[in-house]
Image (tube, rainbow, N blue to C red; front, top):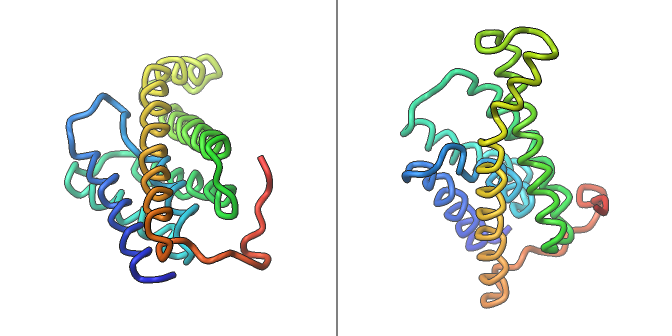
Length: 182
């Protein structure tokens, strides 16, 4: 990856992560969008995960640590893996589909963890259902913010690549770049 592209992607990820520090509605943050964007755009697999994770961690350092961070970070990595569906070919429809899938997976995993802790909801099917129902208002914000941040991140990168061809990613070949169509 050329240094200019790496610097641009890193700056974009860190700026999006820093947006968590601004006043916002509950769960209106770029978590899934950051994870997907990182894996979809960084050529180096390590950077694809590490840079967004560092951005998330830096913003958590400023915001403060919280119970369930391990689940959030694990979900972040899992959701980020969906970015592989965008590595070879990014279209608006594919990006929206991957973003919505990521936000849905993040919602499902993190709220299951809340229920599994057994402190807020009984350890029954009804308790699990109650946990998910109580989280629905947060899901709306998560979906909205991830779509907005995906639009901003992927849109800004597409504009930058169009205006400055040197920023374009090299053509990916080989087994490491094979993706499935959505």
